[in-house]
Image (tube, rainbow over all chains, first blue to last red; front, side, top):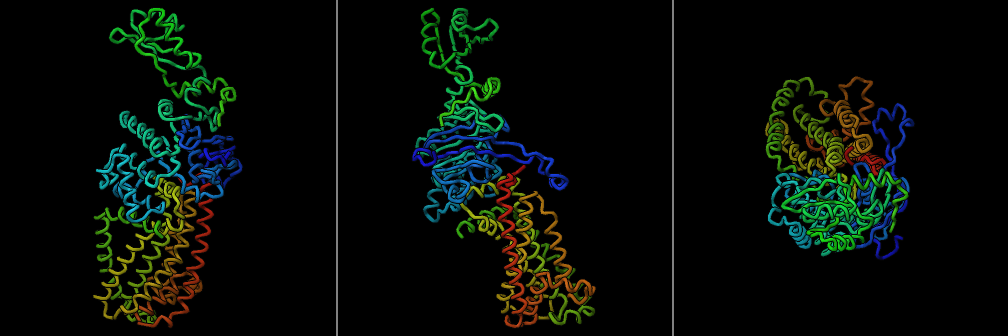
Length: 341
Length: 267
């Protein structure tokens, strides 16, 4: 699996557990009594080159631990990890030349120096020097739209600008693999949307980076990721496209906007019970329905139109993470396993 | 080397933004030296005989001891303190995801602190030169600096051990304070070993500041040649080598252990 030229990352049977209690006094009094807590349980996945791969899951699902193992700052208890064919456990130093990490916490920046100096530091750590380094720094700052603010101290930046500085810092050496830990966590919706566009259009399409992204948001995963792994309690319970995951856990959710006068007909065709809440704005009613499969979409639209219902919008709705997880758990983890890796 | 310089530059630029703190720190050295001058002058008749082998004036004896105390404090305290704060902010983990090796990282982060120690030491020595009645052998400055660098390396080993403990349990467990206190009490920083209770005297030979200060004072305050103090320098070099090897091993093992235990980042 790790030798395929099209595969950027492979993780096989990765297991990790931590001590439940790290207090030195409790350890002295009786370490044996504190059982280790499993954080990752036999995780197996693979990411293709140039792919945006999402890790989707609730808090404590093991996403960040997985990213830390991938970025070599954490060693797994069992299992193997390869990045571009290099063993990340045996040859961590070499793997570090292949990837860059954008952490969730912007405190990891040097706040009292400029954005340019922050990026320059990382360029030097990856071996760039002189004019080549300066050019790379300016390029990275321009890519994230911070060329004009490069001289400012990071401490004076907004959260979004700091997030961009972290990305510029990671991009400065154009790493083949980029690891993003909740990149839009503390951003406002407009900045988050811009950043997602940037990740999709610039990082992935223009620069050809392989991106592994951890997120809470199924909407974000749906907008960005080619595929995603759904993580529940340290296990990858499904790996697929987001639409595939939705299908696997119980159909595809769609939003239908129809003329308010045709609501009853639309409800009947969509098999929506009368207690399903709809909203009416300017004579247009919005309904949400669950289809057995996204492929049913054209059939349903055709049926609505044939029945004389004026349809103004018919679009897939990202399944909320809570719904996705709830369904995955209630169905039992093995039954939703859709491994494509 | 390039990585080390890059880290050092970033850290120094960051620290230099604390302008008020920098000025106050320098002024405090100048102010602190005033009572030392008068106390040393008052104790001169009592101390003269005890320090005769290393200095003719107690004030300069104390100044050289204070320079060594600065070096020891920085060497044992800087690394654990930096690791503690960088674990909390996530900076340590971030820097370790890059290709930099930990010795370069630690050297880069410590460089500014030692540079600052050198400036404060120079201020102290200049003050002593202006106020003291005895002379300071400025041409011996290179040898003196070499001895202080060996002293720093010897104690960086302790700093690395304390850093290793921080990586493991998030606290240096008073190692820097304990080592600093023992070195000050037994290592001839403020008084010679012959004023110690006889039971403590043998222990002073196991403190690196003892040979370091003996050599440093001979060179700087008595204008002795490097060859004269070679036995002390060799003893100090042994401490430095041992400290670097033991400290380095401890830190390396602790870093690997932290990568297993997940203590490399905030928790």
